[in-house]
Length: 103
Image (cartoon, rainbow, N blue to C red):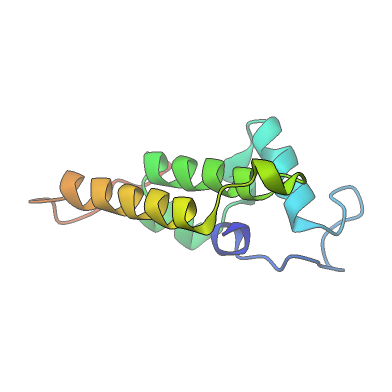
């Protein structure tokens, strides 16, 4: 999910030294520093709604817990994503375009 949100590979030699090579670490740090928007892919920012993106990012953060017992089960992840998608569809009934994240 983090790769989809950011458009980045999990491990990158291109990522700057201060960011580290791990996308997971970089993503978690961005969430801690409330700078999630800085790491997200441009397409996600343009096409997604802020509420959806934040909900998915929070779910992705839970999937990155080191302790496997704290990570959500795949059924829970799927259900949560379906709920996010369902709320998006309901919110957009009768609307022709999505509200951009940066508005």
